[in-house]
Length: 394
Image (cartoon, rainbow, N blue to C red; front, side, top):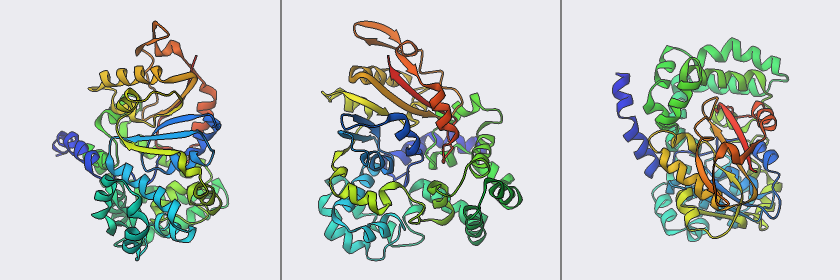
C-alpha cells in the first residue's frame, strides 16, 4: 500500500505545487536570518517568497530592495494580498484577517480594498478562494499544509489538542514544558497510525516536502523521516522556551494571538510597514534562475530556504545553472543563507562555477560561518530542518 502511495507522490507533489497554496505561514525562523544577515539600507535581497511572512519581517529592517520569487503563483498571490492589506487596511482589520485568519466580512473588504491592488493573476486566484477567510476553521487550516494540519488536529482530538496547547504555552519553565510533553503530548501525537501516515511520500507532498528532500533525510538521519520528525518536535517542546513560539502556537490553535505572531502582525511594525517600508518588496512568479537571467543588478543577500534539496537529484543540472547565475549577479562578499532537511549538504561544495574568469568549486569560493550557523540553528523555533548554512563569497 505504502509503495503505491509513494509511486504517485511525485505527480501529486507537482500538481500541488503548480496551482495550490501550499504554505500559509513561513516555516523558517526569521530571527535567525536577521542575526545572520545584519541587513543594511544598501542590501539587495533575493529570496523565495513562500508565505511572505519573512519578506515582511526583513522589510522592517529597511534594506534597499527585497526581490521575492516563487514558481507557485498561489504563493505570489498570498504576499500580494498581505501587501495590499498593509497599504489599505487599518491594523485591527488587518489582524482579524491575517492574525485570526477569519473575518466574516472578508468578501466586501476584498472587493473594495484589496482586489483593485492585486495583479491579474492574483485576482484570479483570490476571486475563487475568498471563503478561505470566511468559512470553516479559517485561513490557517487552508492550503495543502493547512488541510493536513487540520486533518491531524481533528484525528488527535480538537479539544484535547487545544487544551494541551494552552498548558504547554502557559508553562513557566522548559522543565515544566518537558513534563507536559512527556506525560501528555508525546503519546498523543505519536502512535503507529501517525507514524504510518508520516511515512507516506504523499503526506509529505501535502506538507511541501518533495521526494528528494525525504531522500536527504533518509540518507543522513538514523531512523529516517519519522524519527527525524519526532526528534525535531521533541526538541522544540523540551529544549526551547515556548513563550514567543508563534509557529507552533498557530498549529495548536488555528490562529495567532497578539502576543504570539510574526513581527508584521505586531501593531508597531505594521505601522512601520504601512508608512513605506513595505514598498521595498517586489514579488513575482518565476524561478531564481529565470529571475537572475533577466536581472541586471547585483544581489548582496540570497535567502534560499531549503529549495536546493528539491534540486539535489534529478534536477541537479538546474542547481548548477542556478549557482552560476547567483555568482554572476553576486556583489563582493555576497551572503548566501540556506537550510537543508538532512544533517549534511554535501552536494553543494562540489558544484563548479566560473568566477572572475576562473573555474572553481563552491567549496573554495564560499567561506562558511559554521559557528554562528550552528549557534543559531540550536535556537530555531521551528526546528524542522537538519542544518542551517551561512556562506559568504570569499
